[in-house]
Amino acid sequence: MRQKLVRDFSAEQKENVKDEVKRELDTQYKAHISSLRDDLIIEKQKHKKTKKELVQANKLNDSLTEMNIDYIENYMLVGFKNEIKDKIKKWKDNNMKSS
Image (tube, rainbow, N blue to C red):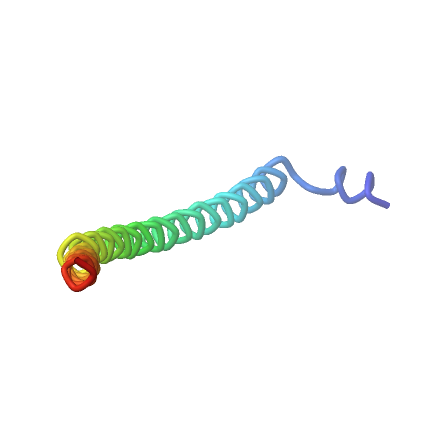
């Protein structure tokens, strides 16, 4: 039956079907490429947003680290020094009372 249909088609009809199939395939191909392009744009935007968020998180982390270092240097060490001074003073006071 298929062979009969093929034989019954004129050369012009065969060419028309061939052109129609080609146009349909081209349309589908272009739609697919357009979809891929849109997906790529979306992924690039997501990447850019994620990168920006990571940069901000790293800056915040660096800032917090700096604050912690400042706290340790300015308050904990001062407190430790004061504690040592108090112990030395008590030790001297005890030594003077003993003498």
